[in-house]
Length: 360
Ligand SMILES: Cc1cc2nc3c(=O)[nH]c(=O)nc-3n(C[C@H](O)[C@H](O)[C@H](O)COP(=O)(O)OP(=O)(O)OC[C@H]3O[C@@H](n4cnc5c(N)ncnc54)[C@H](O)[C@@H]3O)c2cc1C
Image (cartoon, rainbow, N blue to C red):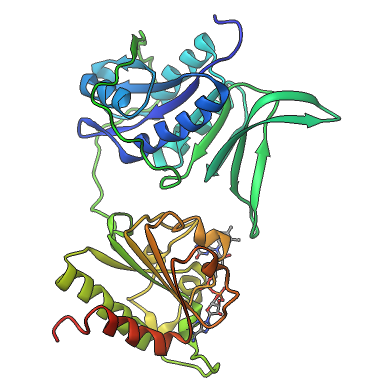
């Protein structure tokens, strides 16, 4: 057993023989922390037939990889995977352990944290390293500060000074993968682990159809907010008109620019369950903290205020266009192309600016 906890561990997920995009982002997240701590990034890979993935982990920035490679672990099974990870944590004692805040990451991170035991800060959008001084608890050097939206409108900074590893899940889309370097090498360590006997087993895995709309992979996302319910003078509008403009934009981007475009929405609009938008806007359109995280080439926010919970789902978009009547709306703080004005006047101008209707 090592003396002091050390190493920034990242749990690497994989599918169809390759690391997932979330995992590549997580290596970058780990790297940002490890550099400040002057520690190493250690990838944790579990499954069967993992050789090519170890190499990918090094290319994308992992300094070393711990591998549990066993045919019995070919399919993700949380009880066995949690056992494998737990035994590695107890033996090797990492300082920080990061997981992606996706379905598998949340499942496994919670199980491991409970058993270690240590805390788990979920859904982080930023990570920092700082010294921490608390008169009641003492002084702590080089603490991982976990930064996530709170339940209101602010970012919470979470301090977990006492237990190691400091464990956190990181929201997909919060960090960009590092540039891969095919020449980069790392240290590989094979770890022996034999799954035990469990009260449940995986008998079949069924892949769900791709999400619809597939916001995460779109090049352009046009999102509608509560601002589409009224015009610039506050008079009620039929929101199908705004939806129609958004659809025209989608068609233009797809037909003329060959970019995959999807229509998104703020949570407020989704939850408003506007009857005119029935079948057009639903839960699967929601962008934000409790919806999809997107990172398109172009994000167009239509009548969206830009509350923190919305921004964390789209703020890493390459270019942000925002249409809002309120020049003080928070969305304008991150918009590259602010359009101060009424949705119903500005959308036709935007359509004309990119060449008019697709069939025209
Ligand atoms: C735990 C939690 C999780 C959340 N998760 C999410 C999430 O995942 N996604 C999300 O979006 N929100 C989320 N929210 C809600 C979030 O805080 C906001 O309430 C929501 O994003 C607001 O939606 P909106 O911008 O459409 O509406 P509003 O805040 O009502 O903003 C409407 C905007 O439209 C503008 N406007 C009005 N009329 C016009 C017009 N004619 N033309 C142009 N502009 C106009 C107004 O100036 C205003 O800025 C969450 C909240 C909590 C507490």
